[in-house]
Amino acid sequence: MPKPITVVDPMVKPDPALEKRTRRVFTAEYKLSILQKADACKHGELGALLRREKLYSSQLAQWRRELNESGVAGLSKSAPGPKPLKTAEQKRIEQLEKENQRLRRQIEVKDGCLELQKKALKMLETLERSES
Image (cartoon, rainbow, N blue to C red; front, side):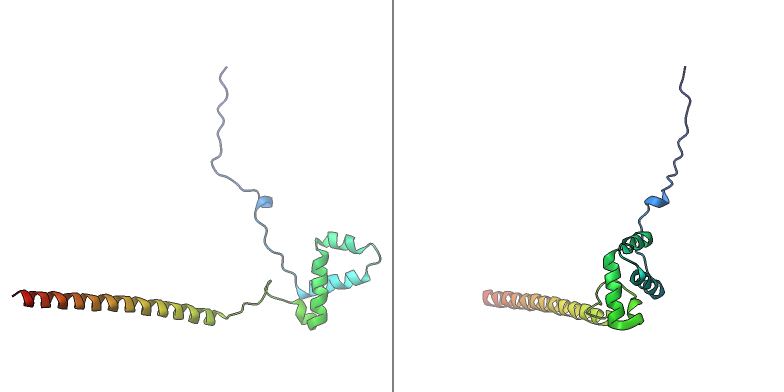
C-alpha cells in the first residue's frame, strides 16, 4: 500500500518565544517603587520580591546608589554603560585629520615619483647629448 503524500509548508514561522530578547528599560517611577517595596520588606521577603519582579540584587544596589548620589533624577539614566569620551563632532574631526594626513602622505609620494622621473629624464637627455 503506498504511503500518503504529505505536503510540507515551505514557509518557516519562527516561534516568538525563541526570538532574541531586548534589554529591559525601567522608568524612574518603577525603580523608586521597587526601592520602597524593598525597604518595606521584612527578613526573608526581599528574595521573593526580586524573583517576582525578575530583578537582581545588584540592580537594587545600583538603584540605591544612584538614588543616594543624585536623588530621583539619578534613577532616570538614559543609556547604559559609560559616557563616551569624545563627542560625535570630535570623532569626525579626528577622522578628517587622519584622512588629511593620509592624503598629504600620498601627495608626498606622488611628488617624489615625479621628481624621480624628472631626474631620470634629465639624465637620459644628458646621456644623449654626450653621445652626439
